[in-house]
Image 1 (cartoon, one colour):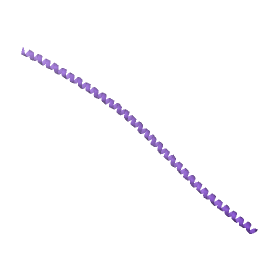
Image 2 (image 1 turned 60 degrees about the horizontal axis):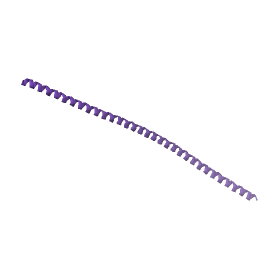
Image 3 (image 1 turned 135 degrees about the horizontal axis):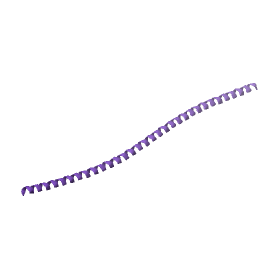
Image 4 (image 1 turned 180 degrees about the vertical axis):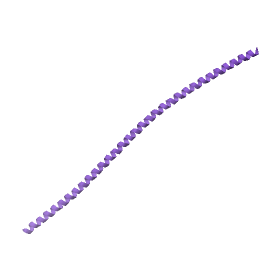
Length: 117
């Protein structure tokens, strides 16, 4: 009976030690999983930051493009207006030159008539 009590005690101690070892293994595994989770959360946070920065850069680029488009449209209208004003000024000058030429011809004719008389 003493042997069987010792055997039972050894078996129980062995089972206890196995459970302790399994507990340590599970604890080690859990710690490893927690570190992996923390690493993944850190990577996710960094990825979110990168995405946010990229989104902000894209918004800035889009706004800059919209501003450039508005500036282009304004400049284009200004050039069109300037071109129209220049064409109008050229037409006025051409008309004045023609009028001046006609007046010169008329005066030359009058002078010619005077000389002939």
